[in-house]
Length: 211
Image 1 (cartoon, helix red, strand yellow):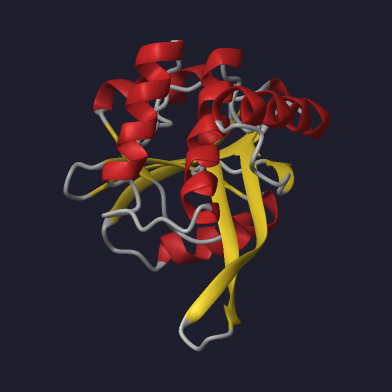
Image 2 (image 1 turned 180 degrees about the horizontal axis):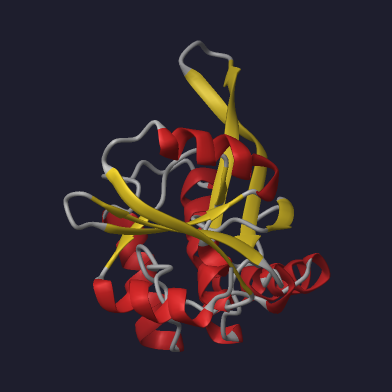
């Protein structure tokens, strides 16, 4: 989804579900791995004291993952519900409280959307433009039997190697290169940290890589 498509969908959904009342916010497509959608705004003080008005509403939708169109549109609607509640000056019982869930249930039930309070990112396919072609992978085992995988920023390989030499808990490690998209969701770290994996996962991906 690009910004032009986002603007088109916002207008379409605004007319269909919100009576066309919502002023168009700032709409952005970002590349967040952790937040598939986000709504934010500022609050300006008004007269009389104690009253405020909403300003600078912004809706962001992430293009990091290769989501089905229906799922991406449901995420936009999720953020539009937040926007409508804030714009109308209503006070919900929680960030995803009673008002939000009423809207969510109605749009899902009456219009077939798949709006959810949260969408787990585990297992989501990474979009093609985020699939790096070569990953520097650190595979290490600890004295306690743990197995760790990490994607390391190549500029920091020497620094991480020095940290490993000073880490008595690391009993073995090796540096590998791979283009496996499994590693696309890993952040490129600059320090000695990684993801704990099972022996099966560790063996699978270290066998497939090369030094």
